[in-house]
Length: 139
Image (cartoon, rainbow, N blue to C red; front, side, top):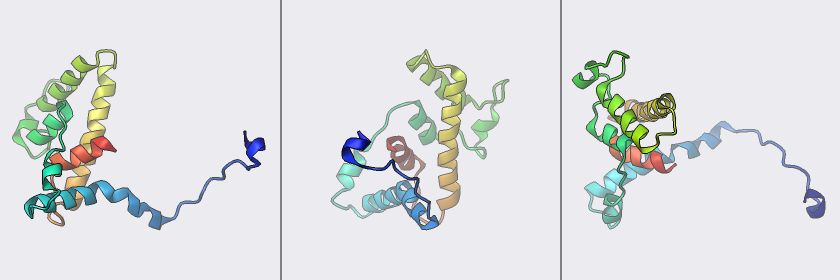
């Protein structure tokens, strides 16, 4: 195919630190959406329809996974918070062929992303773990 099109194979492009600005669209979208909802922007009706209904979203919306929450101290013998264990179990029921440890790892990664978002942007811009989680799930 390359011979027909007379093209050279692609060459890896060097990354520029300024190119990382595009990585923050989820945070910007969340802040914009929250402000649009507060100001009754014409898009607020559309934004209110952004929904996700699965164990991960339930976990984030309940906010029981954060370390400063008392529910987090109610640990199972293996050291996993009850709310996280419940989410993993619910996912396991939805996809029984995926090993529980892989589901647990995926949930942990998503929670880490949400936790990083909250710790980095709290008190700087409007934040919402729930809305950010919806945006991350679409990425």
